[in-house]
Image (cartoon, rainbow, N blue to C red):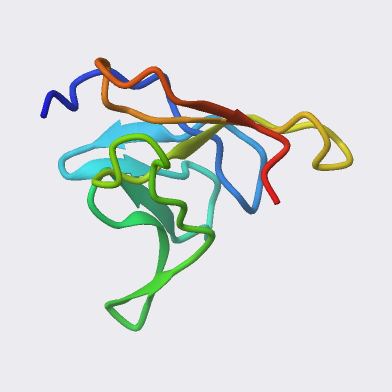
Length: 95
């Protein structure tokens, strides 16, 4: 499965684009420990341990975790995208 396309995910806590890091993406805001990887989805590092936050497996390929690409002010219209470039999945208004 190809997993090499991703626009920067949005941090679930700060609504800012995350930056690419050695093993995925991380929030650049000072003091924020939110990260995103294909395999884990969103997580926070707490005392060196991963605490999963808002993970959503792709409903099409069921392997990778989707990322928040765009957030609206009321969660209506949030856009979640699968990072698998061959997957047509795009989920709006998740339940």
